[in-house]
Image (cartoon, rainbow, N blue to C red; front, side, top):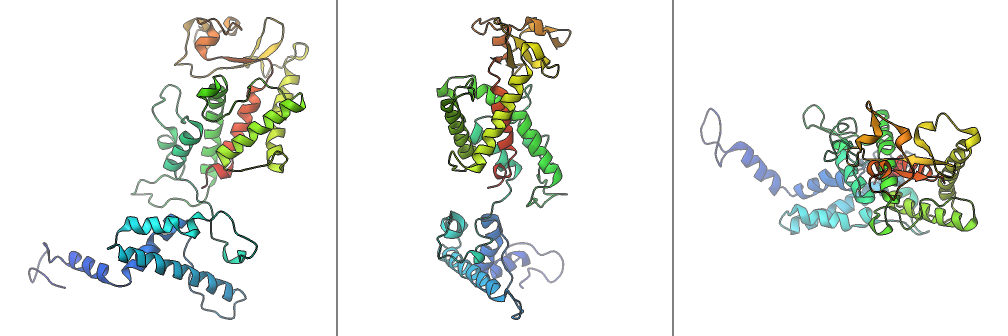
Length: 358
């Protein structure tokens, strides 16, 4: 190793670190090592170690997996070297490779050799935050500070964030605390998303299609429309293409139905539930309707607040009146009791493991 002086600190072009870097990059093993370094970041799985005990029952399987990975490393390394060690070219090759893009295999595939291919990766806080915005059109934020993303502020370190100091490794699986963050996220954003989406014109919706939010599951035609919308939500949020008769889709529909049915039977005038009293309002026709509101700061009217709490007697059903508390508070009144059912469906899906894993 060359030096610029016999003793003391070495600096300049002949610095030992610079010399070592040039030697490493010139080594024929450098390209392969670069692929190996980025393997887990791109493919989400660890590289296999070469099996050494030939008497193991699964030796042949492990050897086949190892050899296949080594062949893929060799091919990606060749692309890296041929591009004058352009990392972007290597990334493009690895992302376009079958290991990254595979969706399914045919009957001839040796599925036991593919156990680590296509596995999901837990999204980082940054990635999950972007996914929420991309799929729903909304963000998880406090209603008095809508410019701040809660996942990147209050819950960042709780949900696997790193500070590159005391915490430098990202978790690969959900732990109890992270699961609690996902649950809170789903509970807090499902309500405003459902109300804002469904209490608007179809053209302005980001997540829902053309479903009528007041549609009750009381006829075959209505049930079909509700299931079709649930099918759409499974596709948008969980990337599942389910048939209308699938077990998973019907489980989601049953959740919708049970929430709707429970609320419908709990708020009739003769058997009015104290538990639901705070979010119910009596309509002029004597029926109790589901009462939802959102963005109290953005759509706020002092007249409905008395000593810091809402005076529910001032809430009425004149939604067409531009100055009514309903309009100013962002109210959605539904005698059909369907909005909480849609909120429950969204909460259920946003809590799903497949939403936080890609």
